[in-house]
Length: 382
Picture 1 (cartoon, rainbow, N blue to C red):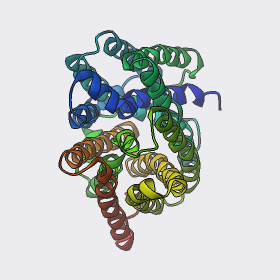
Picture 2 (tube, rainbow, N blue to C red):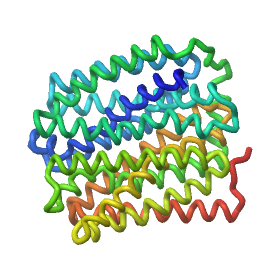
Picture 3 (cartoon, one colour):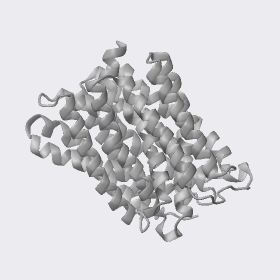
Picture 4 (cartoon, helix red, strand yellow):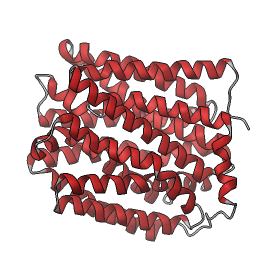
């Protein structure tokens, strides 16, 4: 267990860096004098960079020791977060988002594969769920605390604090992560051969569609909460924290189910997301108590999606695990970028309250794809 703690912290800080802007969207839009949809592009820039540049860096990183890669990338995250705090303008924010997006898949894929090295093959799902607590922690603590700091003081201070915590995370890797050989000497083209395996590509497509639906709604969750009359900045931050608490349960449940049947786990995640996002508007407007239950279901499924997609793709691409998981992270980030863009169009052309409906339409497509894969016996096989 102690060896997992530095990995959990590493994922916590990079995922907080990616999604902190979700909680700060209304505040940053007002401060920078841009529209909410324009601010949503901060999420999109990060996601697109992770999608297109991430696999290249991860493919190269597989040739180096995990400990060195993690320390280096965390220090880059720390420096860039500090740059955004010191120079809080649109151009710097975009540059930082592009840089961080490019190296995010490397951090998460190396951390995930390192966790699998610390356990047995039949417990990979639990190991990855354990380090994915970092994702849940970002949702539970990182984003809500950053949102509270921004609401009470200012948003650059949120990134300054995150920069300090990222340095501490790099130090934790330096002193707490075991010195083990995680390098691989296989040819780059051998790893890249995953890209022309149809069954592998179908699994990537499933991850992309699921995350597109998830982030059509989640990107604008802070603005959505503010649209309900009884949510101010502080109340919204507490609701986001409740979203994260529910994610702890979702992470735990997915970690115990995904090793046995990754596709079925993904199906339940997609169905729960569909129901929860479709119910956000009617319950948020008229039934506050039921709304809290819906937020909980959404948060649990949101966290479970990270585990189910990561384990599912790693198992099917186990001949090149770092590259396979980085591709999954990259394709999920493509989904995040598409979701943020779709959500922005919904906000501009309809209302922010409608993003849940559009997200649900996409996640039900992911559910139907899983059903088709199950019917065709499209399992985790080579």
